[in-house]
Image 1 (cartoon, rainbow, N blue to C red):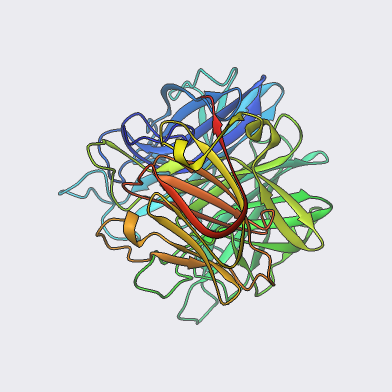
Image 2: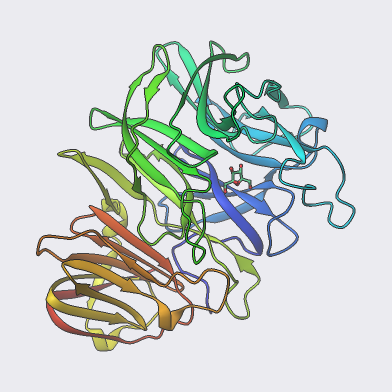
Length: 446
Ligand code: FRU
């Protein structure tokens, strides 16, 4: 079996972004962009799983599907909000301007659709009446100096005092300008249903359309996450990547200053469109879509989610870690000889400056004070040629905490100051190493 054990995958067919991730009525609901008919992207639905522990997921029927004129070609990404004990799911409704005769599941051209923002209310998190309980809350934008009629999407909604705030990813053109500028648009509402434009924020130096914005406070700071399009001009890799930056954000006026500098959420560069929520313990946790260029051999599903990651800020550094309640499930100490891929394994180790570890063909080693990940032996021939990933210089400290599962390895470096997560193909059940101290392996009982 090639499926990961504890990383969420669809039973069949295509998934992309996590959607509506929330802890509601004592369980987690995780929705996801889903094309139920094939292992490639198409008309978007919201798939649905629930979980008590974020390790075991129960699959449910499709939650959102196209049912209205305004979302007849897809229910794009969005988020969840609990209001009056009900679950509010905000998403982007997509309507193609013209039918693509060759494939009705894709638009004709990049600008071949219009996008509105929509809401569906569920009283329990399981019943989604796509006919009666949906409404459009923000119409497609007609003014290009404000935002884009096609490329405005992915509502993130939260409550601030007695006001609801919605952040939308978009792009616009300055009057007379040639190029698009990526931006976040802020709308506000008193009741969660009637929304009015409030403010915007942009930075011309970062990408040209900002997908999946997420803004939240953590450890007394505001953090801004987004997935800007066209930020990497390396033909070997994806052009769009998930990034974060700490921002000054005034929630009263929705004024946000986005600095020029940003960090990748994950240096493995497979992750995209992550989304955060607050877990049952009050931690800010993030989950992201792992892009897979090809399905694994003999498998009919494609795309997976990362493990949840807790976000903290320490001395201006954003640190990521696996929640304690997941770490506690890794219980059985094993030796390297006992390593198989039959169960998820957590490996902790400290490398020396000459150190290297080979996890079933996935290599981690130190070079020039950086930690390098090399998946060249466990990857496939495809458009994505990126196989080497590296941290910045680490000043002599090379501690790793790696979560190894079928098809995916998540490596937290130096207490999570950096993370390298990669999709891997054909991992072998063998571990070897050199110049490594304090190696320990713990298996999950799952
Ligand atoms: C990000 C994204 C979102 C959009 C969705 C469509 O991967 O492009 O911006 O809502 O996927 O599936």
